Length: 411
Image 1 (cartoon, helix red, strand yellow):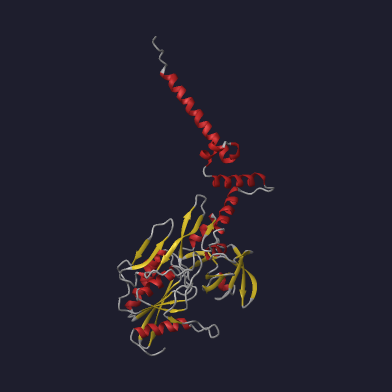
Image 2 (cartoon, one colour; image 1 turned 120 degrees about the vertical axis):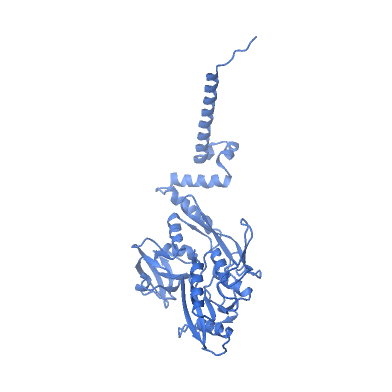
């Protein structure tokens, strides 16, 4: 018996109805699974809502948002949850930046930002002031190098990473920030009005010691483009007849690893600068770019202190390992890890420790895991005298540079 043929239009309508019904069920299942996962059978729930741990976190945030006695925005709950997860890593170098904090953090990577006008170093109790810029709000408030900032707007900075602490201090120009300052053992709270601050990333000068011209280049941070400023300063000093050079990295807390590679390349003709290794990132060896700015026979001294860290230690360690420079000062900070900034969809970012770095000889300057280590040991020790405020470090570095250039007399 011949079969009846269905009309093509009816077949198409049937397919469309089935497709729409399937989409509706899928959307309903995803909604139920995302908002009320306990209402979905476990086998179906697993396919709809992802890993168990993610579902539990979302479920908990849902319950807090729905049940807590006062309204808490979902974005605020997410910020708190992420920050708590990062805190539990027990890694002071890893941070979570909210969207507002990340915006301020990115400003610090350039030579201009809005803040109070200080460079700082990490301290267990907060931030130690290393330098105060002329004409800045900090200068006007009487803050001086050596002061300790322990709180910002009532939030303690104790135990916080430098990036997280400075993000609390920076903000829009014209706004106020209350800083708790410890000076000579006494604490006081001062209100400063933030303003746009121009950071002198590189400062250079020439000094004559025993008839030898010594060019000094001080670098405050390894921000984007810093290598170009260092190159320019070195070339100008070379044209003025410098016999030797001092690279001053005191108080320099680091920055971008690629900038460290380029700045080391100003003194090295070739070969290793640093090797980085991590669990989720491939091992990478950065080498000198092959076009040094300073002639290979010109003596080089690197000046360091306890606040020389991270990218600064990479450069100092590379020049020390390769026999290109004499390191003068005190032992450095001892940070043997590097961080990776991962931007998030909410506009915030994770600044997470991604691996360790090793100098050309294979040294890691940090301690166990993310602990601080012994750092770099100077070839020539020099420490400033706080009583006389004499710059013993620079004096020793100049003497060493002049000696290497052929002078044996002391300045």
